[in-house]
Image 1: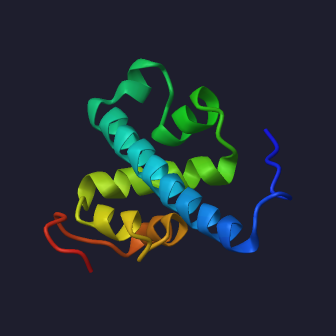
Image 2: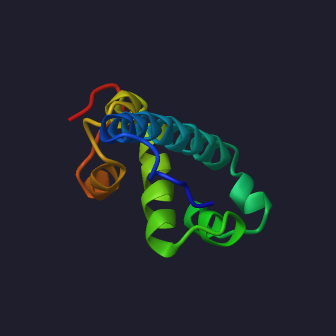
Length: 112
């Protein structure tokens, strides 16, 4: 779906983009929490996917990089739910959070 931005002022366009970014962040967080639940229930295994990553790739049809970031972030979010606030407000990006997987330790009661 292509948007017609020609008839809208620069100020309105920028305001619209800020609003869309907010909506996008909320949708991604809902998806991540859904993936946390899929992982917790092991639904991907019941559907015969070997990992949450493969579930994201094959069942949800996500590109490889997106599937890796979201499945990794969901697995981490399940262990470190406090990180959800950082992801939700943009203090930490999804990509950076996923890259922290080898550096986060503990039981999730503290973040970093």
